Length: 254
Image (tube, rainbow, N blue to C red; front, side, top):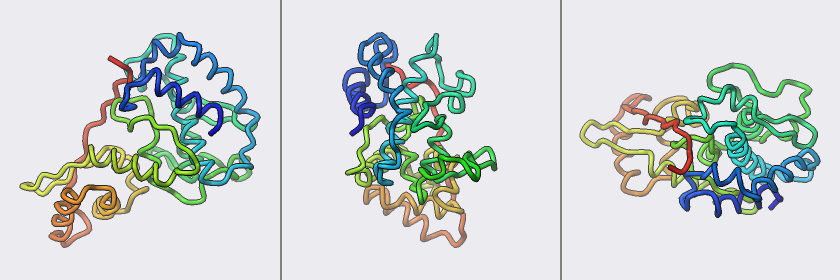
């Protein structure tokens, strides 16, 4: 585990609620641990990414994304009520890593999503000749959506990931998030899904049925059975789904 990840692990223990959902930004920014993290973050420019295997690189960038989100919000002169109140937060908040600039958007869409466009734009993040292309994930793993923390209440909880157990850890994160977010109205036969599955629909499937089927391995048997009954009744590619509201209020301790 690299030094920034170790410090993130300590931050989670000292400045976050046990469930990983809320951060005490005020206490964090005043503490010595945060000052230590800021000094270590400068060293990221010297990290040798070529020495990391893909599973290690995936864990590294997930951890860096989450640490950078906390770092960026803690550095705001006035803590915002919502991350949406910080102009161009995901575009303008970044680190120099291994000699290249990486914004939060670059990490999420360029690296972790395999250089796929942001849902609101057709543009690829890394163009031909970009030195960062060599670190892009070779295939899309949609489970990363349930590991990335954007600074909102509806984000997944913060965890610290390791290349040695990244697969099982992402499974656990996905099961936890989908298990709490997906509900079924048996009477109306409507499946309620988290907003992430709407924003990034094409990462999970081309139709509502495909998206819902993607979630099945991560659900408990009772919920899975209810959904399969609805799917089996449907004679088309579309089924009745709704999407939960997303709480954009800052993930800060109340």
